[in-house]
Structure formats: structure tokens, C-alpha cells
Length: 174
Image (tube, helix red, strand yellow):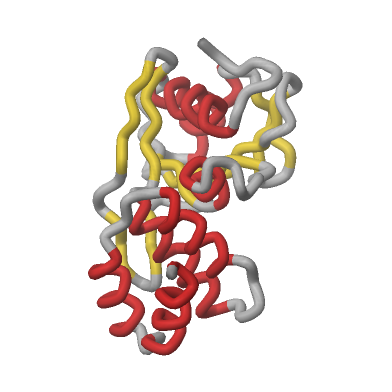
């Protein structure tokens, strides 16, 4: 369907992911855009961050074909306020590589994005590093709005030495 004015974050990210797929660029949505989707827009993200193993030239060609222009490290499109950035070649959360993600297939295309549990871990990892950030609150929003298996989240947080932080997160879910 392409990029158009007034798109939701999910529709925008789907259009970008689909355009990349058509150019043989595999990409997975991460970061704040996933928080926006899973929290049902309780969080508003200014852009979509993707991770792709493809080389920069191939990504830039695909983005240009979709009508984006490179602005610093991000890509901007004249029809939308959202930007797109590529933050690496693999997804890492707390030092562990993520090898599985969700795929949503709809009439407008395919969107690959972090699963809810990994999105919670990503937000908690940010909270562990940047105390006082709103990341833990975002993790709570996701866990309350999505079905999240908290057993691996707790195991991961405890293994990373953040057992008390995890307990506080769990208390916030009640």
C-alpha cells in the first residue's frame, strides 16, 4: 500500500518492512515503535528502529525506492512525521542475541517485530542501565496489554543480577 499521511505506527512500520522485503532486505522492528504497538499507543514513538543483517547500501537503495531521504542517521519521508533508523545487524538484549521474533501478516504486508517478552526485556535492560528512565513503566504497559510469559523474563533479569529490580517490576503488574 505504501507510505501515506495519517498512518498509525503499526501501519507505517508494516509498510516499511514490506517495502524492505520486496527489495530482499530482511528487517525486524525494535525499540520504541514496538512499545507503541504493544502498549496500544500509550507510548508514542517518533520513529521506527529496525535491525537488519543487510548492508547499508542495499538498505539505503530500498529506502530511497520507497521515497525516503537520508537525514543524518535516519530516513525521513515527506508524507509522514515518523522517521526510520537502522540500529545494527543483530538484535541483542542484555548481551544475548535474539533469534526469534513475531511476524504479523496483514492485507498491507508483513511486519517482523520483537515478541512481547523480548520487548519487556529490552525495556527492563534500558531501565537497569538508565535508572529513572520511563522504560520500566513501558515494560509494565506491555506486560499488562499483551500475553507475556514472565518466567524467562524473571530468569533473564535474575541472571543479570537485577533480582530486586525484577521484583519491583512484578509488584507494578499487580
